[in-house]
Image (cartoon, rainbow over all chains, first blue to last red; front, side, top):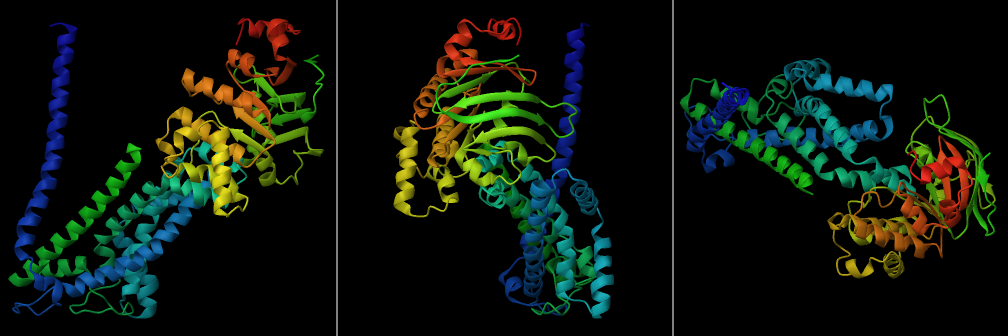
Length: 280
Length: 261
């Protein structure tokens, strides 16, 4: 057997093994999606969006309370987390750069990104829920903000870093002050990337259950007061799916389906932005 | 020991005992340099990589100040003041001494907004005035005909050569007195290069130009004066024709004839 022959055979083996592994990974993804769609679409109907939770046995139970609670909790977390994350990322990339403080913040945020979300839930429970004396939507939002922050901070930092330094220099060379260089030139150059980071950050926290169990807890009825415990899709899904009642289990599937589609579309839109940026 | 000719024209910039040290470096990258820059002329800076020509160029608009820890010594006189002074207003200085970079640096905005950028920074808001000055600058940068129908389009859609002319239009829009060119054609094809060279020669009527180039033919084609730098020192400054035909310094001759570089 010649040398070339051997190489061709090794190449084929490696290619088949890696393709097979990729297929297995993809297979699970489509399997999950398939099961979700099969059970979720079956459970979907208009009542789900129009009605609040109902005791088991009532046919008109819905998820309106969970959907709206989810929007509130994630919405407030986004309103707090996005500006904080983008500004902190701006500090790292444009002001702190390679200073000790900036590098420390980067390290800490990397660690925070891999922190188990249930630990963050327990932390918020200790510093917000306990002193307040009760669960609340605010506490849920705070927990999600903490989880979202390092993601947005790091993507902003990375995306701003990708803007060529010659572009900044060119703006400075025209006599622009630093804040104008950042807002008018650097942000524009990194717009698509930052938006992607924001969308991925929202998608990440929208699927969190553990930190909400400790903080916003749950509610079987519609509540728009952030000061009280609040329903969320994820916790509702957990409660319904683990219940012994068949109609609640169905609602659990519907919740899982709606949540997955929401997060999937956020991810797809986020990636499309990134593609558009690369294509330019 | 350097040979520096007397310049008969008015002087735009006078470099005096200038030294420049990068952050963390032990030795200066530009050493005890003295050099006059003639007004409304083109001065080319040539020399092998690492000789300090770009470092010197970036000192004229204090571009180095964007990065911490760098040290200047000596003086650069411009309009009767030392621009290396700590109290120098860098924003004002950079409107008077503009810069064109190696790679085109079109901002991620429309062609019009690119050229209007420096004008808006100076507080010009009047629409007709902006339009007039953008058009004039684009005409002076010889790109008006190509872009006049798509001023609202993204500047990044232009070719490399067009983008570089756009950057020149943007730089001359604020009417600087000096323009610094840092190897402005090294990323361009020969045709675009010829276009930029022609443009640079036309521009000297209004501004004093310093151009760093790796291309000796380019220096010979466009410049009135040529300075040859080596290891952070100015070895020779002379009238371009003389420099390339009968250089005074042995090092200059060796570099020009390709004995090293």
